[in-house]
Amino acid sequence: MSRIGKRPINIPGKVTVAIEGQHVGVKGPKGELSRVLPAEVTVEQEGDTLVVKRRNESRPARQLHGLSRTLVANMVDGVSEGFQKRLEIQGVGYRAQVQGRNLILNVGYSKPVEITPPDGIQVAVENNTNVVVSGIDKEVVGNTAAKIRDIRPPEPYKGKGIRYAGEVVRRKAGKAGKK
Image 1 (tube, one colour):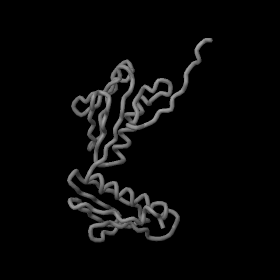
Image 2 (tube, one colour):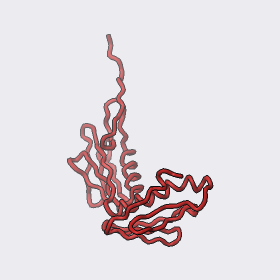
Image 3 (cartoon, one colour):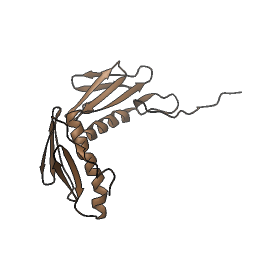
């Protein structure tokens, strides 16, 4: 049995769940999310908890059991609390700003890079160098943060670039000086 898949999902007080066959919809104070789960798993509501079960013991069903449980749990967490990813910009003259809904990054290119976040994603900038990506869908928040980081990933010699908060960049020594 999947260790993750057999754990029940607690539903907070203000969250409602609608299950129609393989379609699971979750509605909460931050918004609503829905997802169609694979045919190998089923979702049942038992009081104020959700239980994800697999229909049979086939290999695909076992593979999708824990994944489906985690996806549903992330939907419940997203509509109740939301998710956020923090990014740090390091480098002389590197900065970020929000203009309307768009994020504008000055990270060493000849022109500023403008990013329009997808629907349901909010981008905020703190102190010109810290970017906060937040939303209710964990997958979209992570993908948006990854796209922002890909504009100028941290380089190993000086550490300049965009990195996740708390990310450790392994540094290289560089050229050896003349003796």
